[in-house]
Length: 251
Image (cartoon, rainbow, N blue to C red; front, top):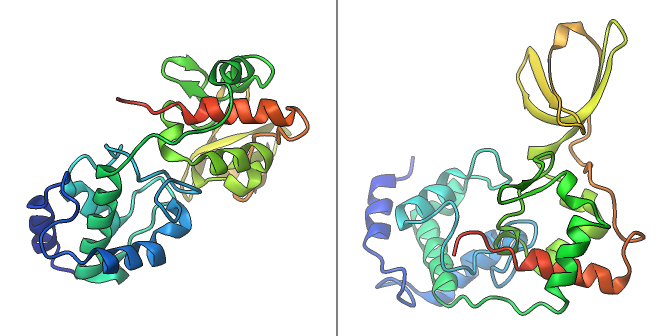
């Protein structure tokens, strides 16, 4: 096991506002990031399948100790895996590079009309029927309150056009049929060896013992969200992406 305490002690002494902690080779840190992190977080850390890291404050890593732990152990309930393979030096370099991205972060400039995008979100797209922004909407799909800080504009566009490409473990579509013929389709909320809990599109919660089911289909590579490629024009898609990109969560 890695000497985690020594690593976290080092990280706690780093100054997140500095270009890099003392003794850190930024060129090597960038290589570690490009090899192990950029595939999900983007080559400049501006997000892709994973959240943007080029932000002043990270949602789950407000301190350097928390950042080190997330890199080491991953983030349960998300697609962020553990990175023990990096070793102490690799984790330290990755954390230093992420902090440098945050120190130099500037909000991205995204083309499109944010106001029109908000109208499309609430109206034509009916997005609030499945997503929440703050206290508004319904939590059938992911919360989007800070989606602009977690996804790049390119990643948001891909999710709108090809939602299956952005399907995540947290919102797996399922279909269950009981031995009595009851059929339920929705999103998997929780599952263990003996039971499964499902939220249907109307917001109703269902819990079943697997022993009473005659059929259980799970589609982890599919998204419950439809493609908007034929629903929106090119200009409307850009406006919606601009609106979603503007959602940054906490200041």
